[in-house]
Length: 266
Image (tube, rainbow, N blue to C red):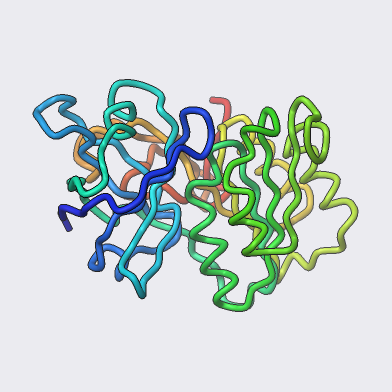
């Protein structure tokens, strides 16, 4: 669906990182964790293409959703300058979200940097469903650990890592994940790994999940043009259950894929 939704909150939560809240009861009613919105960032004809943004948080009672993004170019810079009360032109919710199997009792959520954007909504939903979550969040430094207070309020099982050792575990979040998996005796039949972040990080998460025999799902990111599957501009190389390689579209087949489905490094 396409809707115009007023901006009701806007906060720069870290240098160049913004959390924007919009009022859209219809979209919040249908949104599922892992889905995204295609956002027209300007008010004129430029830039022409919309920007795909993960749905960060949903409050169905109030009909409010939040978008988390980093200013990375002209489009997101325009979006960061939108004022309270202005309407955002939104298309969505789009894509395939996280599909948590019945019988899941524990979710291990791994976020790298801005990868927290599609994972907070998932964590919200899992807590509501009574599923225990362990949230591992990594960043380059302490200042880049995004939405930490919100995550701590959501779950007491939050662990952080920083590349420079300024906070939490000193090293990569995948190193923290490996240490966690070696220490904990997780039941692979009732545990699910969910992750989002840089592609190199996701490749390592997939490798560790395979090593420890735990199923998982990841949220992939690609630049998009149409956001509806027509232009084929956002494909990712995948393998089928029969091990046949094929390209799949992040906008409609994803953005969430099974860990073993994505082919990394080819």
